[in-house]
Length: 280
Image 1 (cartoon, rainbow, N blue to C red):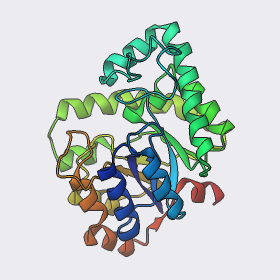
Image 2 (image 1 turned 180 degrees about the vertical axis):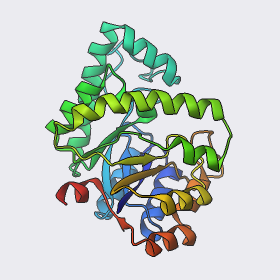
Image 3 (image 1 turned 180 degrees about the horizontal axis):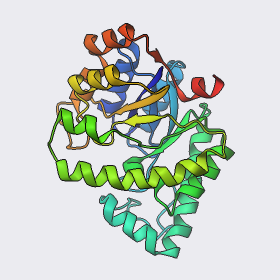
Image 4 (image 1 turned 90 degrees about the vertical axis):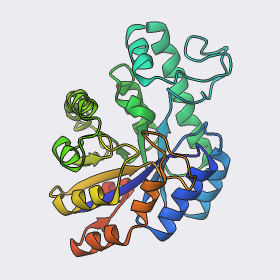
């Protein structure tokens, strides 16, 4: 069995960048997803170039972040400062109902792929902030661009509700709602992805424990793992502050945990990346 351990929001801030590099160099992290308009993206790029063993993918951002294109080119999509809406649910509803927004989104998403390509790093995979890359209005565009720009993998957040609920009943209603919504989306998209060359792991853990990937939960996931491939994604930071859905210093502690490394070795799990899975 092969597992990818990924960190989201690379480039969002210096504390996140430092946590990702620490988790890769001293822990079990194998890849990261880059926000190409993050406040600390240039620092993240420099760090990635110093560590070619860290696979880097594109973390598409169309909520709670800045756009690549200037506001006058996407006036309905961002505010005067070029920032997307903070609420993913509100943004998702607007994106589904407006043809104007959908046209502007195509331009912005293309610009984010082009900016990643200009960096010169191999494109490991594609995912999205708040999983907006699988929004029904965006998915087809993202999929075609992922193939056009040479991505190896594509994240589908096919999490395990039962494992998450057994670990913690916090926010139970939200977990059930998210599990249902994303199960439907992933089922629809998986049929399309099977006709393409992009790698999709059999399971992806992190959706239902976002920002709360505690050591005990990750150890349980790794002990119960029975599929050939899986991705576990985290939101680590070295900063003291944490947000409900991440970043969180606890996620960094898990990636550095001797207990996590021990169960990986005991079960002979192979640390992998999306490019390695595609090659295999």
